[in-house]
Length: 124
Image (cartoon, rainbow, N blue to C red):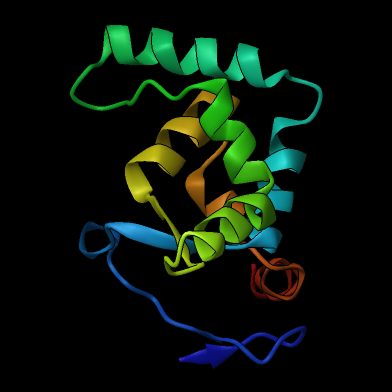
């Protein structure tokens, strides 16, 4: 177990095969937006559709509307709260893997903190 320097959160190394979903928040939403860069949500959705058509057992088709929900979670949380549901948003690892592959990056890029990147650089 380790604690990153820029937060009070603990970090654990867990085999990814045991993870089905990730608790989604504004920080992860911002990282997804940054990874998407100038690529439109529609273009990203089209890329996931192509991946799904080529590899239906590996990648999901993700709509631009869902990408928008992921990038603006506070509205989804508000909607859930108004309906009496939990405000927690969980996103499947399969969705995140598909989005990251379509963006040409690794799913771990979503979870890397500045402190971890700095530490990894010092260790290599």
